[in-house]
Image 1 (cartoon, rainbow, N blue to C red):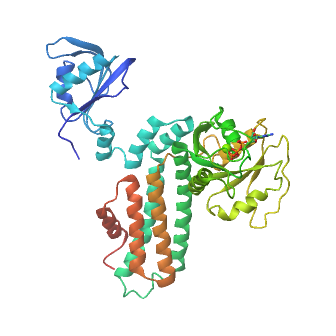
Image 2 (cartoon, rainbow, N blue to C red; image 1 turned 90 degrees about the vertical axis):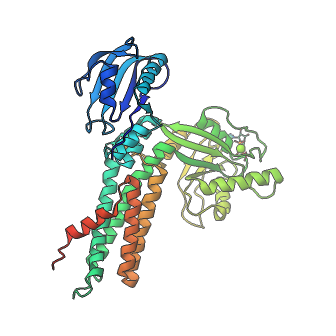
Image 3 (cartoon, rainbow, N blue to C red; image 1 turned 60 degrees about the vertical axis):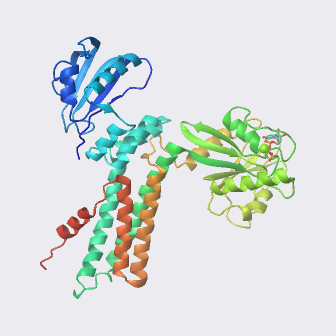
Length: 451
Ligand SMILES: Nc1nc2c(ncn2[C@@H]2O[C@H](COP(=O)(O)OP(=O)(O)OP(=O)(O)O)[C@@H](O)[C@H]2O)c(=O)[nH]1
Ligand SMILES: [Mg+2]
């Protein structure tokens, strides 16, 4: 894939800086270099040069770098002009490039060209943006791993496994006269099980990566006056929410974005859950319930002085969504103490004792939240991933699960193959490299048709 037009843009951010870089990519780059710099710089060597305008006046002087195709970031001819980092200088260089036949690049267009020229796959191209946008060292490291292709390699590994199974199943369909029943093969079921484990491992890495990028959503819930708003203020480090001794103080949902060792967290304070209350409070509770349903973790705050056994949680449990993980936070440990509690309606969730007033137990709570993010080691092993990737991975996993079911329950080869095709398609969406010719090639290469 080659583009006929040549694009130009400043590669450094707007504003003043020591150095400013203008990047030009496309077939006209050598021609532009010859005019702008006076000669075509030696490939991949920093050449000290003067950058000239239409009248031969010097706009700036600096370093010119020429990367001939295909050995460049975009895979096209690329010229970089490293001049002084002032907006007027850079704009004058861009204006000259436009006069000479280039056009302004759209956002992300250099990376888009790199993708179209197979320099990067789609997941890597997205990692470029994630690296630039990274809000913490951990997120930056995860993005770098994805950019180097670790995530793509994981997805490719999954794709290979899916293709292998599909090849096998399709051969079984295409050669029904074979005496052996391909689909009645215990080894095939075993391979499906291995594939499911493989999916689980990649999903775990990708989930962690998405958390590093987008953050974990934690909802503070529980009875009125338990100290939810006080805890929000503690975590945020300032008085974000109104705190009073009157039950039913909080009505609206309050959101704070905080970071624990660089890991982003969205903490939501909600109205206390109780029967009765006025219309405003009832609406507050309705909103609280909606946020609880969307939460990635609920911190159920209990007043340890008034309710040391956590009876409030036992009462509320039936109303809480079953798939949202809960941690019991016994607050006010400065005046009360949590006791064992009898969780007759199910297993006891993890529990912590804190005081939002004195700050006691807060380091343990922060460590717990970090552990909830699946973040134990400083390096984490995360790769940067986005919601789109997770959705595609989940979809692919569902398809393989369905395929395994079709195999077990009905031995319906066509349906198994169809589900596997869906899985492959979903995985291909992540890296953007799915083509059906690929698959056909694999089937013919892997099997001897002459048999
Ligand atoms: N002793 C003590 N008092 C606390 C602690 N945390 C909160 N309180 C007090 O408990 C009362 C209620 O605190 P809030 O933070 O408003 O409680 P809430 O859960 O947000 O209450 P609602 O918004 O009404 O649902 C206030 O008087 C706080 O000062 C604590 O750790 N120790
Ligand atoms: Mg409150």
